[in-house]
Length: 364
Image 1 (cartoon, rainbow, N blue to C red):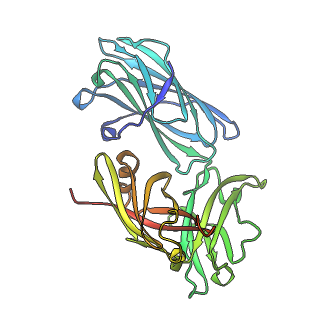
Image 2: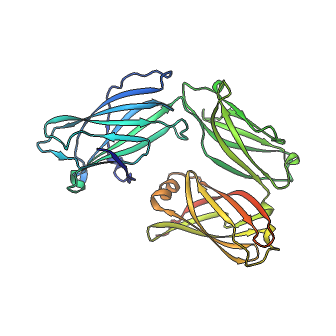
């Protein structure tokens, strides 16, 4: 029985039972691991069978086999008509048609921890679907932590250039877990990165970040769109991210914080975008191509011209993709914008990369 991908709510996560067992040992030098867990099926409030399985520390970038022994101490069977998983990094198989009463059955999981994961804490869910309603389904909430991880905390960062300041400093989050250390990682920029330097540094709470020092005097007027690379001791690329430095006078976005509201199962927000370089273009010219990312989630963007160089921007996303991220942090997360303009009549094209913030409306 093969998996289909399934996005699961974490509504019942606080009710989950921690299942701890002894794991097979693995070596950081190995590219694979194997773990066995015994999970006793238990019933929680509302009649749901929902268990939390903690796999402990797993090596980043490795493939692993996870054997989950399901212990059914009840006097009835749990039929299994389908298997679903919330993560494409897994392949799940179960050879029987049910989890028989008063028995132990094995669920096999193949897990690939990608070479680049931007969070050390990872989770996904597996559901054994009974076909008889949710009351007979078995849900396993899987958690694990990655060791030996070195990665940037985000894929893209945008920063406004202050031309009146001599030097500016930007800090970018970086994930580094043991046994990896700062000696294993070097930070590099392209050869033509005049006015920009980057280095790995440790914060006050033992967290890590990349410090980027910027000298506006050496930056081109149109700004900079470049790549920062993390390399290992052999000079091989571990991870990379995009850095955009821009002049705010070229792009104006209002409001600077997009307040998302709920409607028809989606979260949405509206704003006004002014591209000052476009004020001389015809009003009937093509609208810009706009991409907007909130972390790893791509937002749907609708752009409508309402004047020369002036646009109404409508952004939206599903509640599952966006609401949890906005609720989990006290600091408004960044929205990274990438705009490409191309005049149909004048043949001009330009790019703009900048950021704003997002928040969730508190009104019902």
